Image (cartoon, rainbow, N blue to C red; front, side, top):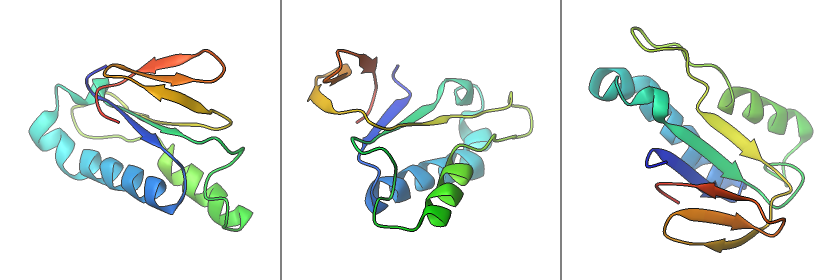
Length: 111
């Protein structure tokens, strides 16, 4: 849970932040945090049915493909750390969980 990052909002800023986290994992993760990488999770939460609402469908699809890709780093098990959750309305953020209007909750370490 401590290495679960929850990004609330899948507009340009949220997507850019998620992409930067993935870049950090790929470029520096194996060198500095190899033993922790299997535990890293990034969850993008969006209330709308899709990410990047103002953009064309082709751009959205490319962003989804790049963000949810499998990452292979030397000496580390294959990773697919990012998950996109759409149609999820956040009702509350506590010290340990993000709660949704549908009653679900997810644990996190950083939001």
